[in-house]
Amino acid sequence: MANYIATARTNYFRIKERAAFDAWVDTVCYQELSIIEKDGDPLRVGLNATSGDCSGFSINYEDEDGEEQNLLEGLAQHLAEGEVAILVESGAEKCRYVTGYAIAVMADPAGGYKTLEVSINDIYGLVEARWAAKPTEATY
Image 1 (cartoon, rainbow, N blue to C red):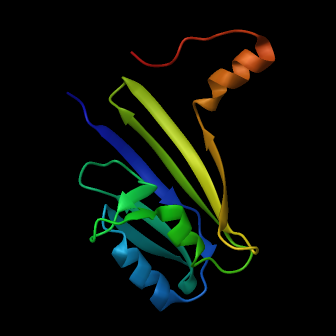
Image 2: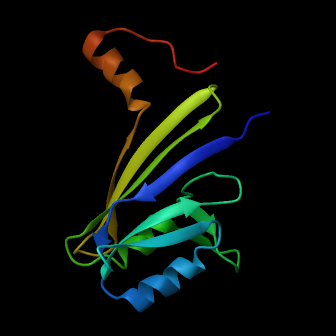
């Protein structure tokens, strides 16, 4: 049996306040999020995601109290005005399947947050819509 192994990180983005961001990252208990700084600027950061099972980012997770949390909602609260965080993940289970996606998150000035998402599996729908062909999936 093979394990899914992912590489997951974000772009660099500006945050409002470093101490609050660090404290929030420490509450994301489902995996280890490592903060990376861009050019030594403590307010321009990115995240690497690792976990014991190499599962990459988990968008919805339970905190230490068993309460449902959303990674994107939490992250958006720390983004500086106009900043966009993009979470990128690519992984595989040996050659059985290869997957990848990217999710962009931005704080919404009206409250909350907004997202955009793409997956490498979107290619199947694009082929069908544009070329009227139905390809097989790259899995076994």
